[in-house]
Length: 146
Image: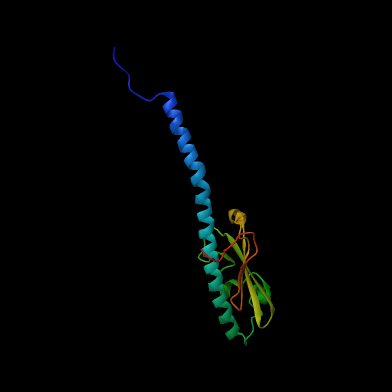
């Protein structure tokens, strides 16, 4: 009689259980890393957006007004001036909507609001003001520190 080689059903089930446990641990960690990466991109885009606002300020009589779409003071940025209304600025699938709020000629707040799958990020909406004040409007902590 020849002895057959192979795995028993028990051995196979143990391997499947171990792989399942590893996947259950690794996948949420991966998702967190992806969200953190998208958030870092949005933060960099807000910094570029801030630089564009300063250029707008010097070109338009030292006023932040009129930087939004159709010369408005609030809303999505003017695409011809800023290049995009979403983050990432380079294109691809958007994960944040960019918004300008300029209540007067000397101040503004730039906002990156998460959309799609990024909306589950605990940091929520990211803001950056003309004075450099950075904040997040979500429940997350240390959102501007990657």
